[in-house]
Length: 595
Image 1 (spheres, rainbow, N blue to C red):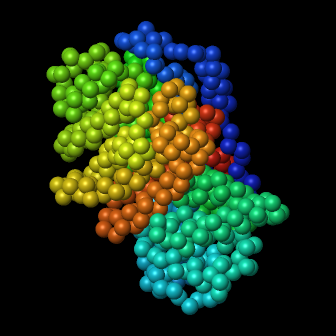
Image 2: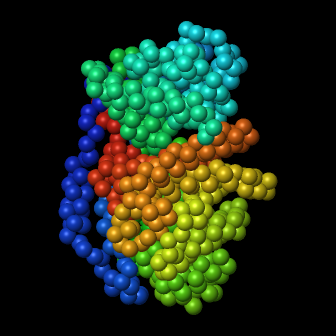
Image 3: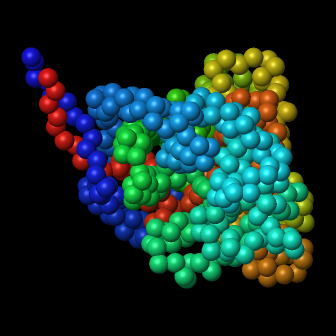
């Protein structure tokens, strides 16, 4: 018999090592960061106009050479092992004849939080259809023995999959005075599940709003009382960012780490999750190298030294919007779109004169290359890059006119804000938001994403985009409000007075702290409106575009939760990139012999 050599993953409870950057890359980045602290301004010799309003953005630490040097190899035998494990998971975890409802729900939750949902999408959908047919959560079922954990988990999983389920399940956990039953105050598992479920409430679902306050209150109390380190970690993680608001790839990496600590962890599932994470990450590096070549070739960051050079951050953003490996061309296209948005936003915000911006807006709306000669050189460079890139994206299905339309609307919104800034005018918050949810660029990103994930574009499908305007609106509103919370302080210091915080302060005569608290309430309301629209759209549109709209809100939360992750990326932003894009999950490999 022939002796063959192959490699398999060998797992134990301690197989995960600390996720530290590779030493050579880490040293390069640390050197670049130190160098950047010494740079007070870039070389302005290639800027074609003097302007006292130039913003000085920190240089990028993610150079083209560094990106091209990333290791994007993934062994073929690991691919084979992943396919074997996928079959095992279907047999062991998704056989609805072998498990109770709670067990199935927990298996689905584990699979999705580990980042494997896309692999088992059809199996999960079939199981959820069976669960809803056996037990209609829309009715107040007389199942007194059901735990708060099970009821809340069922509600959350069904709603996040677009099922139109009811908040009525909460009634069985309330006493005669309509308060939550006292024994729930110390039910950590139930409180955590209730807390996560409450973040999928609609605006009108007051019982779920009350449940959120109840769960938050008692989880905060329990933080100082529990001795279980794992339970404390779960509480802290939930209170920091609820599951539904978390970028999916960050969630997957974090949950792989947490799942490894569980005594009941299934090692086949853990192994598959690790392999799959590293496989997808290797694909991301290949895509990143491709867009880095494009970015270097068009030379915008070199020619226009006043703009943010944020290719890596733009790529990370698109991974947040659409992470599944089959959408590689979408991520490449969207990274280009986001990089162009960032450059043009800086042209409007910090460099262009009002007269020049009016001309540029008109030229883009007319998509007229011949008019370029009437613009300053820096605008010609920007328009040429935009024209070539969008024409290439739109040429496959002749959708360029649709893409040009949303770009024109974006630049019109940019121009409105530029006029306010030049006039030192601070609008009312309502007037500001009517324009700002468009100027934040969510509609442009989602529209391009819609076409980049739909290979066959038909006329009725194109027209259907307009039917989902509310989906894009509320996703963009969340994007805008998170952005303003993170960037408003620096903008106010630079004398830029038009943002949600300053508008509310000016209109109501309140301090910044009060204004920020109010904007946070608007974010909560916008999430609730987005979730309701998401559920409505899920009934008649089986399309990744719906999930992209939710993911846009999630990546906004991740990027702006602790500061401006685009304009001024800090150590947290760098760590996010490392964990999702750069550093694979460390595994131990053993050699096995087979006869």
